[in-house]
Image (cartoon, rainbow, N blue to C red; front, side, top):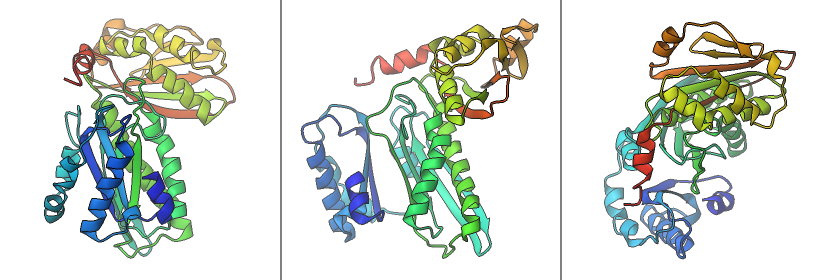
Amino acid sequence: SRKHVKASKGKAGALLVNSGNANCATRTGDKVALECCKAAAKLLRFPVHHVLLASTGVIGMELDARLITSRLAELQAGLGHDFSRVARAIMTTDTVPKEAFGEVPLRRGTVRLAGMTKGSGMIQPRMATTLGFVFTDASIPVAPLQAMLKRANTKSYSSISVDGDTSTNDTLIVMANGASGVRPDPAEMSLFEEGLTILLCNLAKSIARDGEGARKLITIEVSGAPTDDAARQIARSIANSLLVKTAVAGSDPNWGRVLCAAGNAGIAFDPAKVAITLQAVPVCRAGLAAPFDEADLKLKLHAPDCLIQFAIGGPAKGKAIFWTCDLTEGYIEINGSYRT
């Protein structure tokens, strides 16, 4: 897909996605990928480099291209508008299909966005950490759309984690077909980017909520860091802490685990200036325990949504929002037999 996007200068007409086999770390991976692209391009009468690919599933297993190419004519004949069927078809260990939709009103008219994604395990922000596809009928040139995607990804897909493991097959694609005939004015580009960011955040959160074996979505808000990137690094460290994730699973208001995880992030801060809040209940102030009703907070932590706020006092303004999930025995059950 990278080669094709470069060759086409950002143009694409088809997206071919398969689930069940990652077509990665194999002897024939490139050959299979190109064979599938050529077969799809021939059917659709596109240049080969206008076909993009994405694969998800088991790593290291040879993929027989005929499993895909022999079905392409049938798939082409069945092309339609049922977005949900595609969202369901790309699932692996996901328990639900993941979709999001949005509209952005502009001076010349309203443009629409539709997105789908998959992901439940092997989720750790490095770029996209999953498969994500967003489509818009806005008319936007490649260069500004690419820049928007990069910034929006930082706030969404690159701000989630389930287990700290990064997929080999990270893919996030935005395609704009211009069907609305509406091109944002230069002053409206920020409005479209805001709509794109909201959509991507909704998709990303749906992945964290559906983490393998998860029962709770955890939102982590960090403020007072030297920079936004530093705040994100602290939030990532909290999100990837097994101790934090299991404490949330057990509804245990053990804020010390949050402080330790933040300290492991590699970002210097004064713990004596730290305030930690769980479910809007202050549990740590100036780096020390704050009085709270443990039974009441434990009850609040039973909720399906958990909010952890980590604030560093001082003049710095760096902030970030990050999403993860709790860690339960279900994660082990799923991954202990993933290949079988």
